[in-house]
Length: 240
Ligand code: NAD
Picture 1 (cartoon, protein in one colour):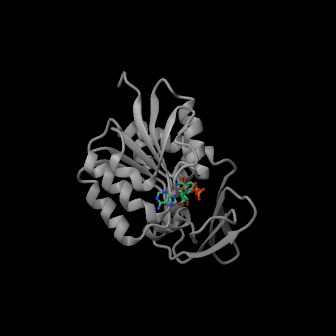
Picture 2 (cartoon, rainbow, N blue to C red):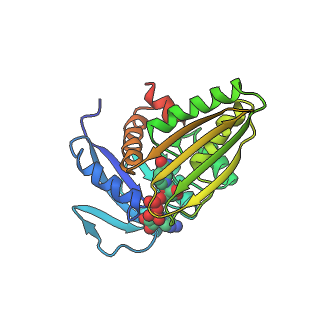
Picture 3 (cartoon, protein in one colour):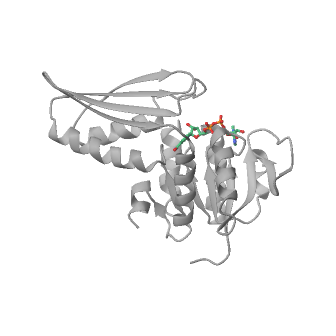
């Protein structure tokens, strides 16, 4: 086990997730240290609670780090991925709405660095993913619908988690349909419904606090620091 604290970059630090990450990382100052916090626009303050803050366009001059945690927007994704490859550092990314080309770039980068990209870092969703695949396999011919609800400021739809769950349903043989709701301050809800003749199964996950995602991302960062290059799922990291 490393004696020195894990050196983290937080990319997207001024956002809802970035703020949760900074707060939770500070609670583990003995094992991790945020060496740079990056925001889309120039930060209002250069140092906040002892952590240096930078604009994303200053990434090339980033201090040495072990793992970057990225919860930004797709337009910021390429730069943080390139920096991690250049530095040989790990990447934990939860940025949703990334393109197929960006996914391909992630696959290519996994040959050089350890990384995890996940549309949802909660343990509950990792388990839901398995349940959906199993239900789809067992219920051939049933309709499969995925309904997701999020706060009104969420930009992408369907959510990345809905698409990931849809892929699990697809692996099980189902062809899911999607519906998205944007309302109030909903943190994140996903319903996967299998409907047959005269019966219906509903598998639901409700996130009530976004700290679950931040905790999962910090856990993933700790795990990646010990791993060989490759693309990992949250489920892989949980299973040791
Ligand atoms: P937010 O809008 O509150 O914050 C976005 C952050 O990205 C801000 O710090 C902003 O300055 C920064 N940013 C914007 N453009 C940038 C650029 N070009 N380069 C670098 N940084 C840039 O959003 P949020 O709610 O914190 O969510 C951030 C991302 O994380 C979204 O894609 C969201 O869907 C995703 N998310 C994923 C999970 C998960 O578990 N995977 C959970 C919640 C949110």
